[in-house]
Length: 409
Length: 97
Image (cartoon, rainbow over all chains, first blue to last red; front, top):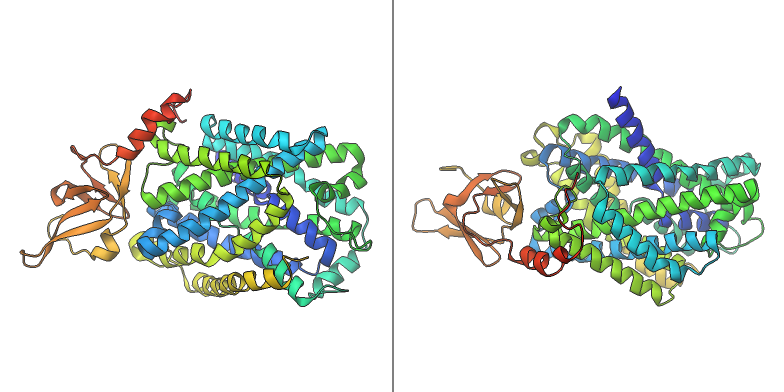
């Protein structure tokens, strides 16, 4: 019974935890401009993150080593350093976006400008990391993030022409004045949002924090293969809401209030309150995950003591890295850069860093020294290679498309 | 570990160093020192940062390298940050779980 509870909890946490500011903004933005015509990317992205999160989960459960530890080991010091710089910068950018998201949620709830909330949000994130147990922090924000399911209920309440949404999803091409270039650019953004590198850093380091062994593999699997796809459905619901409300009117989504508006239209003030709590939980939870991931990647590359399973003073450099990252996040947001814009860039840059993150996982998952009898089978390797190809194409195409489309404008 | 055949690049370089007694993470293997006079050549020490870890202190080579710390100073950086920054923040010593 206890085990069933642990599994359910994990699944629920995964659903709530999958959606962060990147998914919220990108899905709404894409829904408003393309309807459901990019839905396939969400599905491709969810399968990809399931495949690789499961691989990194198995590596941790069998070898006890988290992903970034192995990235340096397999790629060597120099290439490892390139990977470190790329994934760290992307994770830091994502952290800035998440803190901005928390602050924007508070602005929407209170009417007080987000610039005032940003330092408070960062301070709150640090306090939680400093004091709260790892297992608790994951569960609380994951479960609260489940409130985002209201997007799915709102979509149903808005009473869309379901046939038309399905028709859009079945016709994956740009419409109206949209070009193939913007279509491809946003496909890469969605892909990056679904497969953001910090997800595997956090997932695998979290496995070490929670002292996973081979016996935890079934829990890991159900969390990944049920939680993430349901989180993906949530992403589609967000896109659907925007498709119903904004696409016919030709309105572009540029603010977080536009992302949440469909819920307010469907359920009024109460709906708005629920969705804002959901957005807060999802972005705050992701802010915790990204700050921890900033610490994890650097500490694991250099071999420093890391983790919340020891006292903060025992992992002093790990905690110092996170404090510096949060300070950088505050400073960046104080320049009045638009957090929604930061989010849009963060998912595209994430797409660029993807191959470097996922290649070492695939290599290690095939190494019997680490995996013993748990090495990848043929199906996993086949899919893993296909995805590596996709990631490579996305990462190479990202910059040219960003220039051609002027970042999707 | 007498006689164990290891591939220096694959099994030693860039591996995590762990204190065998406490489980503390102590850095990475940055380099390997070989004794070429022996036949076949053997690993005489591991290098981590500025410290040299003699082979006798290496206890286990698995997915990480477990060592006996002895009087090696492998956590200089961590100790410095601990003393000057982290310890000044209230709650730095509270138990994790």
